[in-house]
Length: 285
Ligand code: GUN
Image 1 (cartoon, protein in one colour):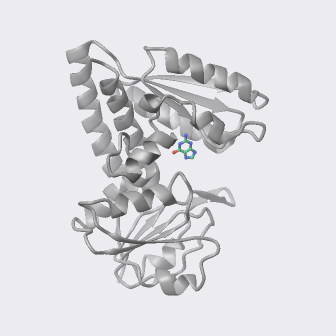
Image 2: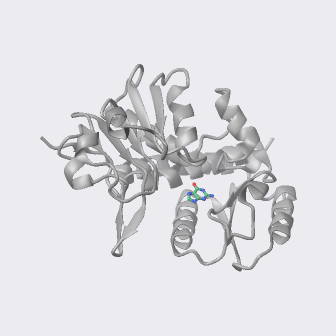
C-alpha cells in the first residue's frame, strides 16, 4: 500500500490566492498597501533562495516587499540600528530577519528588539508568550503550515498522538503548542537528541513530524502503518533536496506523507503573507 501524497504546493497556492484577495480588499478599504521588509545578512545560498521566493510571493499577493541585503561583516550594533529604524517607520508593517545570522551577531538580541506588532515570524518573546497562553497574535509560519497540511488528511485531530522530532524555537516547540491548543487537542510528545528508544516512541505516532535537519533520518521501521508523516527537513545531499524522512520507504508504510520539495516549504511562505496582511491590519486604524 502506498501513502497519499499531501500536496503542499497546491495548498499553498490556494492560501496565497485567498490572501491576495484579502489584500486587495484591504487596500481598497484603507488605501494602505501592506509592506514587508526582509533583512538578509551575509551570503548564505539557501537563505538567498528563500528570500527571493518570499519576495516573489509578496508581489504576487499585492504586498509591497523590500529586501535589505547586508554584508556578512555587518556588526550587531548596525543591525540593531536598522531594526530600530524599521520599527519606527510607519510605512513598514512587517519585519523579517532571515536566519541564520553570521556568528558575530547574537540572534536572540535581534529577535528581542523587533516590534512585536511587526514580528511576522512570531519569534519575539511576547508573541511566543501569547502563543503559549492560547491567544496567539501571529501564528508561527512553518508550524501553522504543518497543521494545515495535517488537517487536509485528518480533519479531526482531537485525541491523536502527535510525535514531534526536534525541539527548535522555529519548528519543534511552537508545533507542539499549536497541536495541544484547545480545539486541536492532540496529545503531544516531543523527542530530541537525548530521547531514549526513539523508534519505540515514533512507532506510536498517529501524526509524526520530523524537524531535526538530518537527511533520511526517519526510516520505515520508525513509522506506524497508516500514520500521517510531515517532513519539515530541507537537506542538500549530492546537490539534491531531501527531507528528514526516507520518503521512498516510509511512503510504503504511512497513510499520508508530505514530499520534499513541494510539502511544508511552500506553506511557510503562504503563512508569512497572511501574517504580513494581519500586521498591516493591526497597525492601520
Ligand atoms: N530561516 C529558516 N526558516 C526561517 C523562518 O521561518 N524565518 C526566518 N526569519 N528565518 C528562517
